[in-house]
Structures are given as C-alpha cells and as structure tokens.
Amino acid sequence: MKKFLLEILQFALIAVFIVVPFRIFIAQPFIVSGQSMYPTFHDGDYLVIDQLTYRFDTPERGSVVIFKYPYDTSKYFIKRIIGLPGETIRIQNGAITIENNSNPEGFILDSSYITNTKEDNSVTTLGQNEYFVLGDNRSNSSDSRIWGALNEEYIVGRPLMRLLPIQDFDAFPGDYSDIN
Image (cartoon, rainbow, N blue to C red; front, side):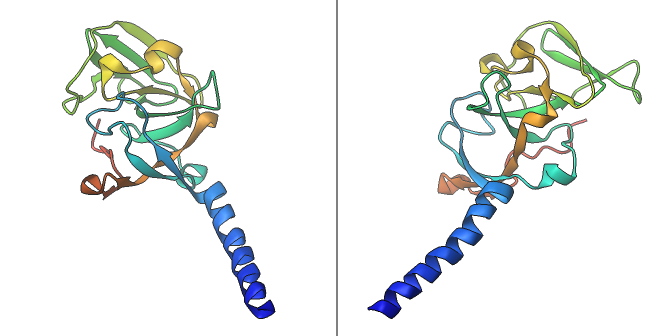
C-alpha cells in the first residue's frame, strides 16, 4: 500500500511539473462566448490557445487573437487583427481602407469573408504596439471601433485548435492569412 501511495504521489508531482508550466506558458483552453466572430467561431466553441508564438513573433493582419479586454483584464475577447502598428484605418459605410508607409494612398481591405457588416464611419491612427481589431460579425461586435486600439501587451495568443464541437475540429481555425 505504501508503494502504491508513493507511486501516486510521484505521478502527481510529475504531472504538476509538466501540466502547470504547459498551461501557464504554452497553451490554455478558451471557450468562445457570444456571436461577435460568427460565422468563423460560434458561441461555445472550445479552443486551445497558443500562448507561445507571439512571444517571439508579432501578429499579422488577418490573424485571430485572444486578448484581455483593456478595460477589464479579467475578461478575454477573440477578434481579428485588421490594422497594424503605425497604420491609419478609415471605415466608410463598412468599407475599410488601410493607409501605411507602403500604401500612403491606402488600399481597401478584402472583407469578402464577412457576411454581416455595420455601416459606420471612423478614422483611427495606431501608435507603436497598437492593433485595430474587429469581430467578423461586424454589426454585433464590441471591438476597436467602440473602445479603441488594442495594445500588444493585452494579446494572450492565437487559436491553435478548435476541439469542440467535434464536427468543426480543425487546426489554426479562423486563419485567413491571405487578407491584404
């Protein structure tokens, strides 16, 4: 009996030393709450978040990110990166124009994957380490149009896998890296 308890204790300690650092530094679970990313993600989708990539690399336009909501860091949001640091984002009647050093006259962002837009108008110029994020369900999303730019320090990671529902299982869900 003593040997059995010792083996259980050893197993538990090994599990703690492997699982806890993995969970804190590499990957963590995330459950989508709400419809702001519909149709890409649905309410209740169970995701595994990659927390390691953005420690060594920066997010790109089109990437889906999970981040701490800047005005209440106990809440986590999931949105798509539209604007990168130093860019100016102009929204006119739902069309998004991005101005940057490479395109001083701007280019219109390909939003053909969006089915639900919002006819709003705004201009936002991003500072260093700031991103402009939007939900894919534009008419039903609290995002940078409402609360402003997202500072890089709040970004937790990106979706690595969608585990549930089983029929929607995939790796790197929501990855539209071909967006301008």
